Image (cartoon, rainbow, N blue to C red):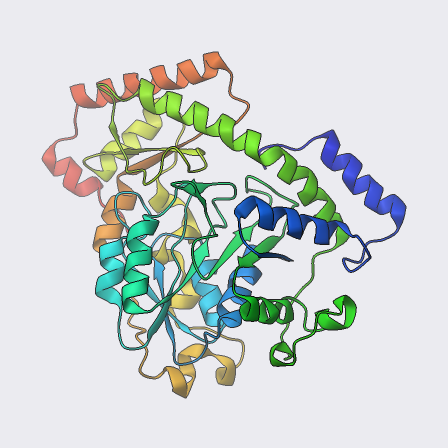
Length: 403
């Protein structure tokens, strides 16, 4: 959670005092947020969900994906991206990331097979994918595009809001995101028929309460609604978001400029003027150098070491345990027999190499001028010490890449 204050507390208290906690109350907070967020993103529809995982699952199911389909996901994303594919009954196919630590467009193109129906580009750590390249490939290969913008709330790619460029987009509003209500999410789209199915996947009785009915989108699904508490808090948070993102970008750009000469090699940014600005990327010759840099600076994270964000830690996927009952497990469904499921921890060494020698330095909106200057100085000093005493080639081989 980046910012939270009296505005959110007052909004929360107002809902409690009103006694109107159910999201379908007339003129409710959830409805208001959905309209405002759709306008903010430049899409026709936004629907609140209970989580980012639910938003992704609703997007995939709403677009008609299911058993017999493959969906391409990147090697570096929170495990929920792949889990949502399984929840829809489809099979995730995992592909390499590039130096941006987001999906490699070339890896996407190379991985498309006869059963591939969709791709989920994931905007990770506030950084955006190379969406022009991914959308070109998707159009040429006739793939659906579901943007996972769960970690890029408020970010954009060349002026187009993250989550608004594909057939559907998904967001998370849990505690760690730029905009939060503790837990929650949203699914967005311009596809009218898909949106009716999204509603059913979020709440199979939504038409009873809302009066918005579509016989084609009436089916059983175990969804979960947001409450007016989440809606009220999200309205307060949305008012903060544009200024928050501007502050983050300004600080991030200052750090990038201050470390650009003689500092460590900068990572790849696909749209630095428009992404969230929450992360500064540096890349090193080896995983060992990356580890030493983090120790010298005293801040920063190596993406390979972030647990469930790298495919090697997706145990239910690697072990092909996709459901609580064999008949509902996508890995055992006869329709998926011809789908690719050849997972292994060493399947994508290029991704593991990149993730092991990359360092992410976080940016926070409350950083003062002296703190920013101190961070820049610390980064440059650490880079100078690394340059003066590099790892020997033997130690470098031993240090990386990790798996």
